[in-house]
Length: 435
Image 1 (spheres, helix red, strand yellow):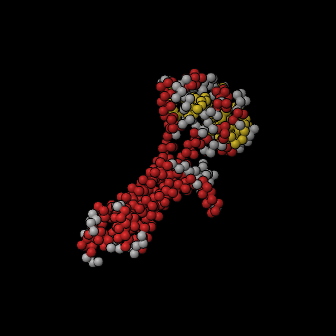
Image 2 (tube, one colour):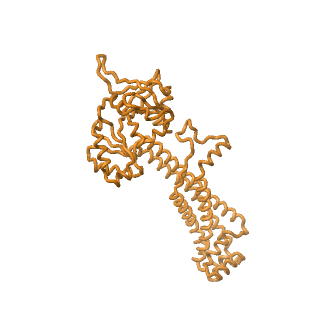
Image 3 (cartoon, one colour):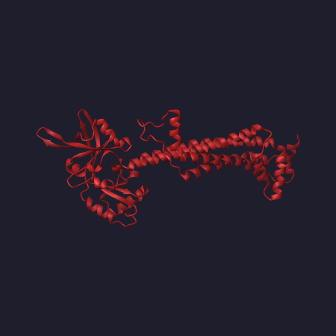
C-alpha cells in the first residue's frame, strides 16, 4: 500500500472521520506516478470551469439584451392599453376616472400614469421623399407619465407640440429618410379622404418639424411620428374621441394581473391588452433562444464532466493494489465506491467553483472588458449601423448561477457512478495476483 493511502487511512482513524473521504481527497491532490491521469484530471477540471464560465457569461449577456430591448420597446409602447370595440373611445375621461377609483392596492401601488392617445396611419412627404408612418397623437403634458419619449429627444422638446400649431416630432431615422431638419415643413396625408367634384381626395396637412427623438429601436425611429392629440383628432375627424388610454405600471410584470382586474372593473365594453400580448412572439423568441443556448452550452459542461469517467477508470486501474489492501483491512465495497466518488466530485466541484467565480466576475465587468478588447484588437462586435444595441449589455441573475452550479455538480456526480461501482466490485485476490 503506498504512502498516500496508508497515511490517509491512519489520519482518518485518528480523527475518527470517514477514511474514504480522506483517501479520495488525497488521491485528488497527491502526485501520481501516472502523469497522464493527472493531465486528464486537470483538463477535465479546466473544461468544467470553462463551460460553467461560458454558461454564466452568455446567459448574463442574453438577460442583458432581453432587459435592454424590453426597456426600449416599453419606453415607447404601452404596458396596458384600454380601447373600445367601436372606432374610438368617446368616454375616455370617464374611463380615466373609473381607473383612478380602483382600489389603492391596484391603482396607487401599480399604475404609475395614464394618458389618452390617438393612433392612425399616414404618409409623410417632402420633395420627392415619401414615407409611410404611424401617427400618434399625444398630450405632451401627460405623455411623460406613460413613456420615455420626452427623455429620448435628440433635438427639440416634446412640449413644443401645441394644440392648433400643427407641429410634429419625428424619429431620427424617419427624419433622415425624409431629409428634413428642425423647423422645416413636411406634408402629412391621412387615408381618410374627402369627397370632391374631382373624386375622393386624401386629407392633406402641412406640419412643422419641432423635434427629433431617438429611441434606439429602428421600428420606432423610422416609423413613428408624434403630433398633438387635438391636431390628430382634427385631421382624422375623430371629434372628441380618442383611440384609447395608455397605462404605465410600476412593475411591468404585473400587467397580466392588472389587465384582468381592469376587465372586471370596466366591464365587457372595453378591449384591454398588455405588452405581453402585443409583443408576445418577440419576447417568446428571445426566451426560446436563451433556453436553446443554455442546452447547447450545457453540453460543454457535460463533455468536460464525463471526462471524469475516463480519469476515474484509469485511476481505478492504477490503484488496484491499494483497493485490494484496503479491502483486506476491512474496507467495504460501499466505502471503496465512496472513495472514488469523492475523488471525481472534487474534480467537478473545484472546476465548477472556479468557473462560477470567473463567470460572475466577467459577467459583472462585461461592459468594461468588451470595449477594452475592441480597442486592443481594433474590432467592433456590434456595429451601430447594423444593430439596435451597439454596447454589449449584461445582467447577472443569481438564479441562473445557482442552476448552472447545480447542473455542473450533478453531472460530475453522475460521471463517478460507473468507475466507483467498478472499483467496489474488484476482487482483492485477483488484484494482488500480479503485485
